Length: 198
Image (cartoon, rainbow, N blue to C red; front, top):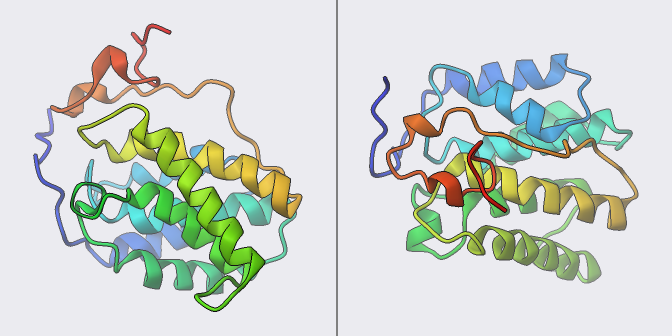
């Protein structure tokens, strides 16, 4: 059994991102959760940590492109990694903003051209990220990068459908089968735990 660090590791192996980009460029999946799960299976991706701050926008951008969105995917992923890699480990607890929600915001900003001086699109991105954070906050801590990604991405996907007119595939039920590897798992209180009680 793999022991999970109590704190998030703060560095990643650079090859992880090259492999992730190759995977994204080779899939035709419209499901960002499925894509993210494939990316997270890489043996160099830790259970928790800032690698997720890039992998989440990779998955969203890829599903968006595969669902008919008009983006240059390689360029978009390079931009996403540049932005995601500056969100530090533990931002959820130390900054009060989970990197899963921020990763969705990164994807939205790249697609829409949002930036600090933008107008309406700036407001839209802030709204989307705040909705993602609200969904994540509803379950409390401690953090779980997998759970928080599974909570944020469907919220973001619905916003993409409403605002950008691109509908990605989101599974009706998302189940986690690796909770035994997370010493701080919420167990039955997590909506993705097989034993979750509604």
